[in-house]
Image 1 (cartoon, rainbow, N blue to C red):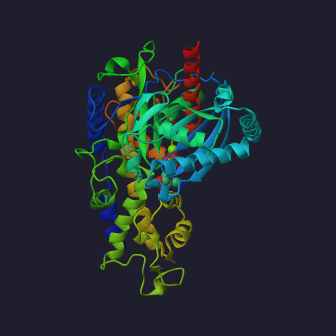
Image 2 (image 1 turned 135 degrees about the vertical axis):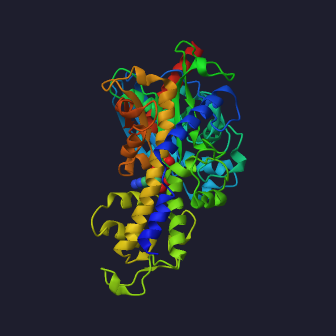
Image 3 (image 1 turned 30 degrees about the vertical axis):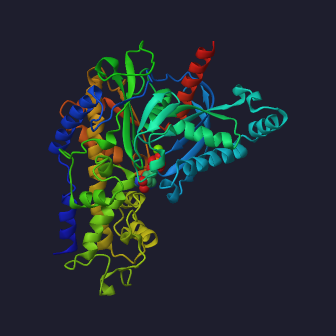
Length: 501
Ligand code: ADP
Ligand code: MG
């Protein structure tokens, strides 16, 4: 069998047909409804106690931190009150060993340290004044609370929210595994480490990244109406949307403002269809899940998001490498290679290591449409240590990678369409005042044509169709997690004031 034929067989296993998409939407709607009625279902449908979205007139200086799955971001945000903002920002990769640290303290001490560094670098003035005050005042209670930055903590893992700045970790996802932290209040864990360093920072709000994205998009999006959905396609995937209170059947314990008749719901859709009743399941999906830290969980996320796509691709490619009937990433005869040297995979190539293939190379593959695929081939050489790959090798890589990326985008359309249908807004939306959706995450931001592939799928969905798809606007919520967290910290600061009055 030729490499091209074998490649086509593998790629075809990632086909996710129009019919599959429609079946997916129906099942998504069913699981969505189930989660509104009771706890313990596959879509957790977590009430956030956020009962409205901003309109762009909000003002003030806030801090925000974002523990994603790959990076930790620290920023300060000045909301100008006219849908614009100024943002100062720093980012560090989360050290791999901290993702599986023995104690929660180790991870949170690292986070607090990054906040200290940020304050020293970008808010030296505020920081120095605070340290001076601390030295001249006799008791720690002597600091004025109003000198503290209010910080919104974006924590992108499933949390049982118990209040605006209180929530306990339900489970880790995205490769994190620190059992010590489960069941603990993540705001308190962070505040404790901040206090150990004596920083002028108060953790005011706990924010899921999806909710932050929804808020940020509502603050800055054009038009009169706010966004209905905030969705993440980064390391992981998840969405939060505005639901009618009347549809929320399960009991709510905390206080909230009932006047809007709505509440933002964090779906935790990464766990959609853990039972695999409609999700596709190739041999490589099965292998990935088996070797993951949480088999059987986050099954939708494992087919959609950045952390996993590269690994699915790696596993599929390894089958090709091991297949004696085709020659992939190897040639006995360098004459067949236009680079005139022998193709080999270095033994230390990360293609042999779990998680060794970063999803970002899939964006390179999708973007390279030159006849020689020279950019991709260089990347294979430098990132994967596949030396002198031939055009045919790169083409096989590109075809399988593209099939996995396309399946991811079409699966993403399932969640988006189901929520659009759930909110029932299509009938009143127009092309000028469309249903607005904010998205964030490296995958949707950088993978070429990801949004176009989502739209392509939306157009074939019953109840959406060509006309409906035109009335859905999917826009990047730029700096979503930072701005969104600031907006929720603002709401929280307002609540503190009204309590003390
Ligand atoms: P986080 O989830 O920590 O907020 P990101 O939104 O940046 O962070 O997502 C990081 C994930 O996106 C990683 O899994 C990474 O492999 C993937 N990624 C990074 N760059 C790209 C890219 N150019 N194309 C596709 N995926 C990418
Ligand atoms: Mg993120």
